[in-house]
Amino acid sequence: MILRSLFSVLSLSSNNLTSNVYKVTSPTTWKSILKISPCNIYIRTITVSTASYKSRTRTKLKSDFDSSKARIVLGLNFQSPEDAVPFYKLPVKTLVHIHNTTKEDVKKGFCKNRLYYISSRLKVPPSIVTEKLAKRTFIYSLSFDWIEKALDVLLEMNVSADRILRDLWVLKYHHETIYERLQRVKSMGVENLYPWMVRCSEDILNRFLAISQETKDILGDSVSKQTYLANRLNVSPDTIQDMCLKIPALKAIRVTKVKHFLDFLIAEGFDVEEIASKPRVLSASQKTVKLRLDRLRELGLNQINLNVLCRSKKDFKKYCESIESLSKEGETTAKG
Image 1: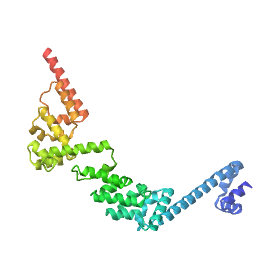
Image 2 (image 1 turned 30 degrees about the vertical axis):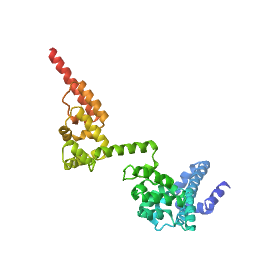
Image 3 (image 1 turned 60 degrees about the vertical axis):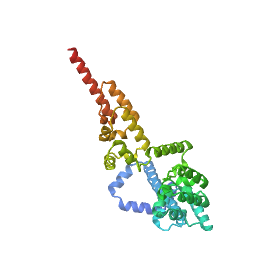
């Protein structure tokens, strides 16, 4: 009775199963099977058959699940299959929400899909925007009016499309907040505006503005950081350009750091010619350089090579150990 029920579930009749198995099974195999306890055969049959049934059921459920996703995605008005691909990775619940928002946008005449609206406003291909939007689905939770006004302000303030796309979180902020923050930064003479200036804390913004003002004071009539550095080191701008190619980290150093670091090194007894010949030191931490200078002077060194101050922690430690070793050898020789 149990076997017949099992065969019924698997869509097999007991007669067909017996007939087919008998045809493909050799007499020798049958002899081996007959030696096995009926109970063992029963258990093995159930195990194999049940596993097979579960596998087929799981495949069917997955197929139904994927087809449900496909139906929802098809209703999102994508203009090409490629634009839809990133959205297939989203959960069904999220897709349903996006579908409802899209349906409402179409009904009110806003757009067919916010993907294409943002793409047209930023003048960026949909194939690029779709990857970003699939990771920032909150865009479909904001009101259309909210997004429109936020984009209006950002673009009017000349925030580049690339920067907006990399930081879509800025669209969560009210358009008045966006305007107030960016206008405040712009009034300080900062031309390059970023979305993070809207999102950062008040303390971070104040620090940025203070550094910007100090940078402006330092540069004076100088056109750029490279020109300032060339003037301080008594070299040509082309020489500074070569330095930056050899040491890329120099490009990212703030003007304020360059000024304070140069002032510090000159105060420590290094002349500008020596600094210009070993500019890698400027990419190091001023705090680390100060500690290393103190350490080397403790070891009795007066003439210090700037390149030594830039070594890795491990190499600098070895260098100090070698000096200590030489000092001990010298003391031993003197006593002898």
